[in-house]
Length: 236
Length: 163
Image 1 (cartoon, one colour):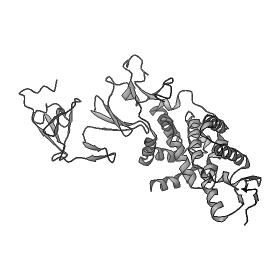
Image 2: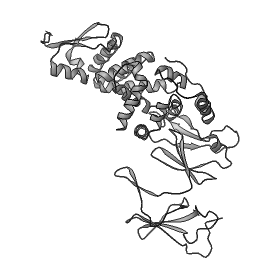
Image 3: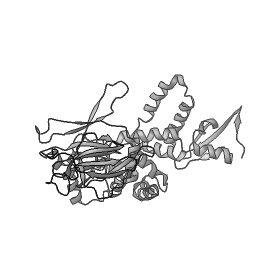
Image 4: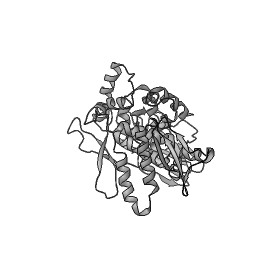
């Protein structure tokens, strides 16, 4: 369905001018685009509206991702010495045949992110989207292809199914709005336990009553329990 | 229609856009899914390809010949040939890619698409517009907004040529 839509869209666009009437040409164009590095795509989004729609579409990002190889991200710790300093680098053409050439590309963040007092911290990346933890709002996710970002102060917990390579939402009896510290969870009685950092709705209140987040792996169920100590030590 | 033959080998004629004729062995064109179907099902001996320029067709036939000679021992030579094959002006490379797509020569199509991608990846926004004949439909205000949002997209040594 998506492909048909874009075929029409692109056909109306410019391949008509290059070679009249062949709808398959849009497919080649999409194929070519899907082989471009992300910084080129970000640039070409500025070419015209149709192209912007195409490049930001889920269909295209999935296709682009299917060609992508894992790419290490490096963080420049000398942040702040130069106002235009680039904080994040991507290793391009990593580990080619003879380990000789390693090119560095730059992952650009919007300026306000780059120049913040506390530079964002990479938490993880998945399916082409990089998740940062950032000072004023706890998390934001960035798609380096489209430069689109989602910033929010709520959390959603999902389970990754390796077999189908998809994410599935997990049930929780109450709405969950916490985020745990980064340490690996402890596994007790078949459930994962994290120490909670913050209750996102009551940021100033230490989450004593919900000090520990529990995920029952068999039922895929989230819940919270109070921490056992008398003093909450996870908030400083 | 009877196919003309010389000895054992079947001969086929391809007619390019400017009516130039190319005579080649039928076994060569079987690499193209489109021509294979035409040859097998319709038993034709002459195939008109009005949408493909003769210059482009010459290049593609050259590839078909080289590819047919490909053996494990001359792999390196073939790789060099491929590199040289796409080393043409971009306009011509696009013509070849479009023709290869039409003829459905799958291995070559993949190679051409990658070659086009490698050639345009460092192009400027303006150059890409020229290459694919795109007209910008953004307002001047939006354009200047882009410059503010992602100045890096307009900086650096971007290639402004369309070759």
